Length: 289
Image (tube, rainbow, N blue to C red; front, top):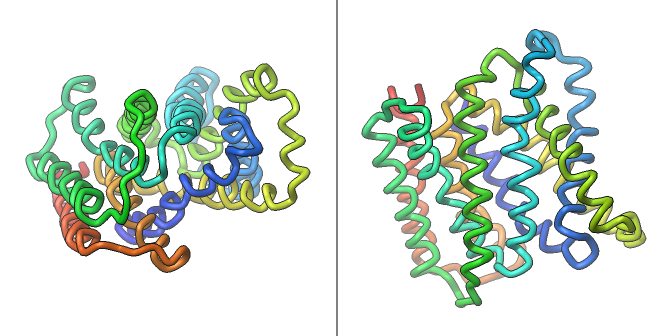
């Protein structure tokens, strides 16, 4: 079910900022994206080779199969990694929650399609919940750099655009095909840039723990995570899929509490009510169609 997949994905993607932060001291942001996509592609390849009904492949569809998924992998992941050099993970998570807002705006103004009223309300309710979590429930205030925030918001807009375009143009392909294309596009895009800015990136693997982080960030969070994401897009709709950005901050806070023993304010639990109601609204009949 899309709702269950959404909550599973929130656990995976909720820790993405954390793993990226762990890798930044040893890797350039572009290198993180390259190896993240590489580990993700290697994880997805067995699924693709054994999958039946991948969708008919024709060369004229290659620009769509690589271009649209690139908007959700290579480009935004590089922007996200760059922004995390100057933003803490909590601020990054709340900025990431603007995804459904971009999704609604793109659907209305770019695709010229009608959006049901509950979808608009779900965006407002969900973002209100995230605001409460960080305005009331945050344990501490950290520095906020407007330039890095704008870079992250640009990354989120690419996520939203990819989600909307996937739901419109790639429905004939399986989630495995789209996910593998996403990783492949990320490799092709970030590889040449990495060779130019961080040619000695392999030295970062002298610390064996970085292999473990990339297995989690690339193989699990990105590879398996993309399977879940595109499944949600195809079965629940683009705007519903983008509601993952509301659950991710809550997941980050809860994981921080149980694994890092960080204090959690009452605002977190109030926000959780708003977030769950937002997911309910976005899944009501007519919203995800």
